[in-house]
Length: 340
Image (cartoon, rainbow, N blue to C red; front, side):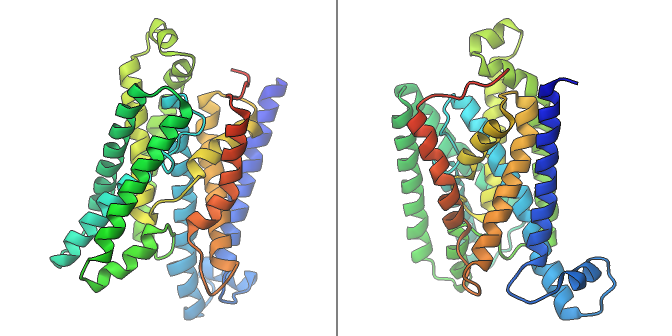
C-alpha cells in the first residue's frame, strides 16, 4: 500500500473518530446536569427519568445531529463554490448566498404568519433555494465583469449586506409575535431542532451528497481548466450548472433550518486540504463533509455552554475560528499546490 493511501486512510479514520466523539460530547454536555452513565441508559431506553429523557431526545440529540449534517452541507457548499469560481475565498456566506436565502425565507415566514398559515420544511428549503440562486445569479453576472478575486469578494459582501438590511427591515416592521423568533434564527442557531427536522435535513443532504460524489471525476477535470475538461469529453456547461445547483441546495438547507452560518464554507475546505495534502475531489468531498460536521458541532457546543445559560449565535463562534483561516489564505495569495 502506498504512503498516500495510508495517509488518506489515517486521515479519514481520525475524522470519523472525531465526528463520533464530538457528537457524543454534544449529547452528554449541557447546562442541565446529566451524567454520562445516565445519558447512556436513556439512549439505550433503560432509564425512566422523563425529564432527563426529554432533554436528551427532544433537545440535545436533534440539535447535535442537525449540527453534524448541516455543518457538512455548509462545508461542501463552500468547496463547490471555490471550485466553480476557482477562488480560494469563495463561500456561501462571503458571496451573499446565505443572506439571499435568509431574505427569501424571512419573507415567506412573515407572509405565512400574517395570514396564519403553517409552512412545512419543503417550502422553507424551496424558498431558501430560490434566494440562494438569485444571489448566485448576481454574483455570476458580477464575476463576468471583474476578474480580481478581491473585487468579487467585495461585491459578494455588498450583496449580503443588502439582503441582510432588507431582512432586518422586514422583521422590524412585522406585526406578528411569531416573528420574534425570526431574529434569533437570522443570527444563526441550531436550537429548536426536532427529529422531524433532522429527518428532512438527512434526506436532502444525503441526496445532494451522493450527486456531488458522483461528480468527483468531472469536477477533478474541471479544476484543471475548462478546456482540458472539454478535451476529456466532460460536459463543462452541465458540470458548471451542477456545481451551482448543488452548492445552492446545500446552502439553502442550512439557511432554512439554522439561518446564515459564517465562515464554515470557506475555512473548512482549506483546513481539510492542508490535512489530507491533496486536491482530489473524490477524497475532499467526503472529507469536507466530515470536517464541516466536526467544526460545526464543536462551535455549537461552545456557543451553548461557554456562557450558559446565555447562548451565543453559532456565527459568532464560527467566525472566531474560521476568520483567521480566511485571513491566512488571503495573505498567502495563491492556491495550494497538492498532489493530483
